[in-house]
Length: 304
Image 1 (cartoon, one colour):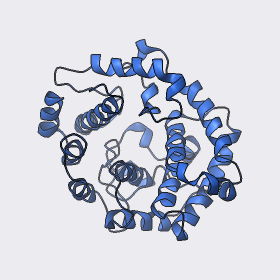
Image 2 (spheres, rainbow, N blue to C red; image 1 turned 90 degrees about the horizontal axis):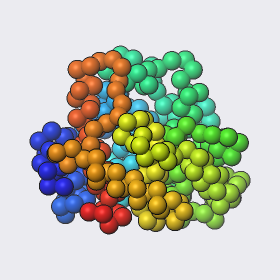
Image 3 (cartoon, rainbow, N blue to C red; image 1 turned 60 degrees about the vertical axis):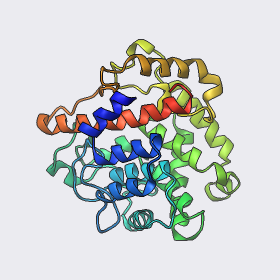
C-alpha cells in the first residue's frame, strides 16, 4: 500500500489522493469535497472529465452519478452545498423517458471520449437505467424521502423496477446500478412497496438472480477481459450475496493481491479505440481510481 500511495500522489488526481487520505490516513471529508467541487458546474451537475472516459465539460448525468457515488462513499451530509446543488441539477435536468436521465449527450462527440460514450440517436436503448436508477436513490436518500427530490426519486424508480422485473438479463453496469440502489434504499423497505408497487424483497431477489448469472466466475479471465468480477457487486461482508458467494469473493480478493504491479496498483483492461493521447491520461486517472477502490474493498474484508 505504501508504494501505491506514492504512485497515487505522484501520478493520480488530487481527488483520488484526497479519497486515499480519507479512507487510509485519517484525512477529512472536507478535503474530498473541495477536490470534488472543482468538477461541479454552476447548474449543480458535474462534468470536466470527472468520469475519465468522457471529457465533456458540461454537466451530464453520468459524471453527476460518479460524483454522487463519492458523496455517498464519504457520507456527505445532505445539507452540504455540493450535495444540495447536485440535487437541484437532477431536479431540473430533463429526462428522455420516464425514469431515465440521458446517459450520453450529443455534446460528448465534441470532446475526447471512449467509443462507448459516443452519442447516437438510439444510444439510450443500450444504456437504459444506467445510471438513472442510482440517481433516483440518491435523491431519496439525500432528502430522507421527503419533498420534491424524494417525489422525483420514487417516480423515477417505478419504471426502472418494472424494467428489472421483466428482464431476462440486464447489462452488468446497469445491474450494478440497481444493486447499489437497493443497498441505499434498505432503510426505506416499508415505503418502497407503497411508492413503487412492488415489495423490496421481490425486487432484491430478482436483482440477486441476475447478479448470480452475470458475474464472471472464470478466475483465469480476471484482469484480461472486461467482465464483472464478483467484487464489482459484493464490496463488503455486509453484502446480501456475500454468504453464498464467499469462496468466489475470496478468490477475487486473492487475485487482487497477486496481480498488483511493482507499484502496488492495477492497470485497466479497456481502451478507447480513439484519441490515443487523451486515453493515456485517462488510463492514469483510472489507475488511481482502481487503487483507492480495490484497497478499500480489501480492507473491508480484512485482507490489508
